[in-house]
Every structure is written in C-alpha cells, then in structure tokens.
Image: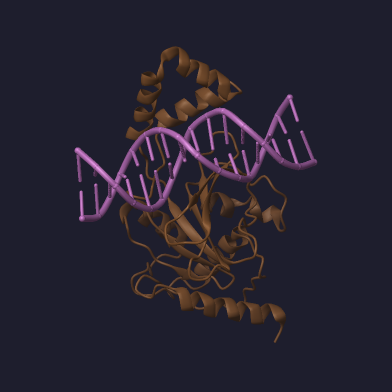
Length: 246
DNA sequence: CGCGTTTGACCTGCGC
DNA sequence: GCGCAGGTCAAACGCG
C-alpha cells in the first residue's frame, strides 16, 4: 500500500473516531479521489463537490438526499435550520458542519461595513481615533452600539484536517486580527479576516482539544472574489466551483 | 515604510 | 442583573 493511501486510511479512521455520531452524515470514501496529507481546504472543497456530485444519495438519513448539489443544500440549511449541523467525511479533510446559530454568527450589517470603510478608506487609524476624540467617547460608544445592533447571518462551515500547520492554504490571503484561549483547551483559537477590500469573510483556526493533530478551520461568509494565490490547478480555481463555495 | 502579528482591553450575548 | 466566555478592536511591535 502506498504511503499516501495509508495516510488516507489513517485519516479516515481518525475522523470516524472523533466524529460525533449523533450529528454526522458520512459519505463513503470514494476510491477515485486522493488526498495528500497537506491538502488545503481549497482542494478539499473541490473534492467534496466532486464527491457529492458523484454520490449524492450516500448521506445518512438526516442529510439531504434528493439534491445533486449538496453544497447548495448546505448553504440553504445554514439560513433555515439554525443550530443543526451535519458532517461529511472527505477522506483527506472533513467538512464538519455548516451551521447558522444565532449564538455563533456575528456578521454585521451595512452599518458596520460603513464604519469600517470610513476608517479604512482614510488610510490610517489615527484619523478614526481623532474622529472619536473630537466627537468624544460617548459617540464612539454609540457607534459601537449601532454596529452591534444589526447582525446578518452568514453561511458558515468548518473543516477538520490533520495537519502540522495551523493555517491551511486555501488560495486566499488572510490577516490575523485576534487570538483567544478557549476554555478547556490548551491551544488558542486564531481569528482571520480576508484581506481583500470589501470582503468580510472570516475564518477561525483552532486545534481539536482531544487530538491536537487535527486542525479545525471554520469559515464564515462567502468570498466575492477569486483567490489571490497561485496554487496547483489554479485554472480550475477560478471556475464557478470557487465562487460557488465562497 | 507598509504590512502582518501579538496581546490586553473591551464589548456582547447567553445562562443562571 | 450578574458573571462568564467568545469575539473584536487597536496600539504596539516585528519583519522585510
């Protein structure tokens, strides 16, 4: 058995071991797909889409079975079925869940982007600070309250991937904006935002508490642009597949 | 100098 | 209403 296929088997067993069986809808591992260990989520998504289109009826009963495009259903369910997850085993990477929980979704509406665009379009933060200073702290607080009031739910899903590196290459450029130690875990959670202008897509990266070898990457929102990196198979990246997912 | 990361402070939502 | 935990902000810092 080749090293790669052995690794694939090992990964799959890991996924099954850690899978919350009450929430999962496993997809049988397709023999025609191969996943190198270091595969990024970009390739995983592509493989996922391929696999779903190949075997659309192979999900468990709580997963959609009539659509040939599961992803669409996933995205739809994110807005119609809050707090419901399901999981698909991808072999090399696992699409853990797609959820739209009111507690977890923090995308904000136009007021926030307006505030951000005011700040960023001016080119530096000092203007904003000066702005707040001139207006006084109460106004700054008011702005924050306005920001917080309008929240828009964004589609969200996460990956579980066995990897030594925390940040997987998905073709997009990310800027870290925060890190937090989550309760009952040894590893901090990192927060990233897409660096593209006017793109509000965010991702969270953390390691699985039970198995630090597994990286959980959670995406929130969809990119309205193409990946910025040159990655393998890049011609296909710019295809509708990419836009479909992001 | 510009861009990205770090990190402590702050804000918000949720559970009790 | 209060406390906790998660998420975000932004000043300081590092690096190329």
